[in-house]
Amino acid sequence: MTTTACARCSKQVPDAQLIPHRGKRICLECEMEIEETANMRKSVYRSIFSLPVAIIVGWLTICIPFANFVLFPLASIAQVVLAVQGIRLGMSINQAPEEFGVGTTEPILLIVFGAFTGLSGLAACGMSLLMLVGLLAAGFQ
Image (tube, rainbow, N blue to C red; front, side):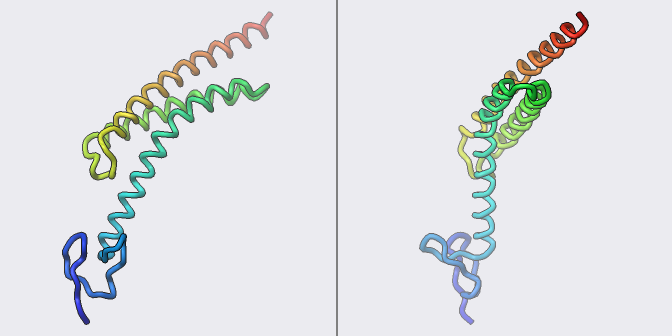
């Protein structure tokens, strides 16, 4: 049984435990680290793209007839919750972006998009509250 050094960590590993990766042979631990970093990077990008989508979908729920009295307040609350989560994720990534496999702009994007989503969610909450007050006032006349 021969051993070969891993191309990434230089640890001596039996040949049967080496995996081909981009023209090099790496060990199982390095392969798992690469996959974990790639999965974290994907989740960060999904979070970045989900914040503007939440704004668009949240404001489009007001256009749905009869269901907008329920969906619009729920979508506005969801916007605020997503904004808080996006800002928290951006702050945690800002501490150590190399652990997540992202650059320095992704945490800033998360924080900025989170702030815009939060402001949009608060505006939508206010608008849904005014809509509810208007419905109650119209019902009592």
